[in-house]
Length: 149
Image (cartoon, rainbow, N blue to C red):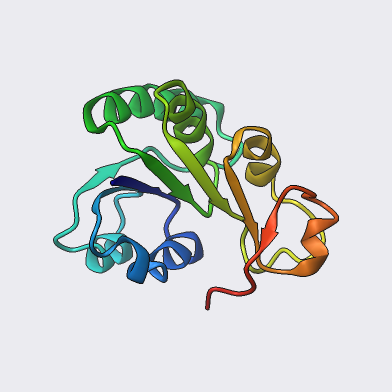
């Protein structure tokens, strides 16, 4: 299985990295920011740099949509996993066009309100994961796996 892990730097990337037991033996690549902390954490990993800032930035949304077409056409992942933020949106929608399955993990610090990214990808996500039972009121089709920390 080929896995695409897509997310912003900081906590979003940490969420994905904590899933290491899952992705460590898979053919994988990352889509994230070109920042020192990212490059240090993902040293030796296959990585594509996306455009940032992403939150509420239409210009970079368009650029990341074109990047998603280019990267996903080349890599052909079976699965795309993200915990946000906005860079997940174009990769999930374009990924669905290419037949990829998607898993979205709503961030740990949201206990009763959705993130903008969560709201945007929820309708098309194959598996939507929350980390608090209260979030199932916000996302009824979600599954609660508890905290991944």
